[in-house]
Image 1 (cartoon, rainbow, N blue to C red):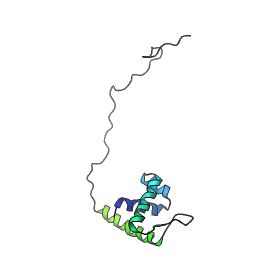
Image 2 (image 1 turned 90 degrees about the horizontal axis):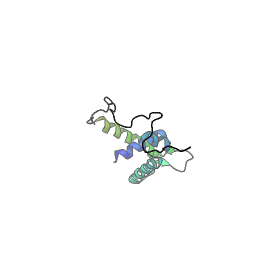
Image 3 (image 1 turned 90 degrees about the vertical axis):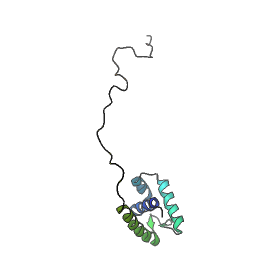
Image 4 (image 1 turned 180 degrees about the vertical axis):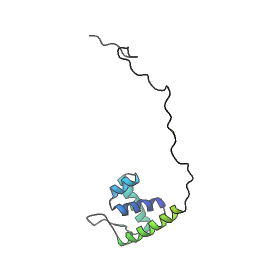
Length: 115
């Protein structure tokens, strides 16, 4: 199974609100819904009850959410961090950019307005 689709589904299942889940994942709402639809198509059964007034999981969705959460926790628990940690000192810009404007000095490329 695709771990990304499982992660997105788990977030949507916890929030029971596609827009909030999408915001937490940092993706558009339409992408969240498309991911859930793709997962449902791969599995062959619906995970959410789309006829209900509010967002609710089907019984199959509840069972799959528990299984997917356990699988995801198992797979992330075994991984090790290989990328270096972000951070460090920020360096100041030295002499780059434009000089500040001086009041009364003629501006380069600008003609003086006639009165």
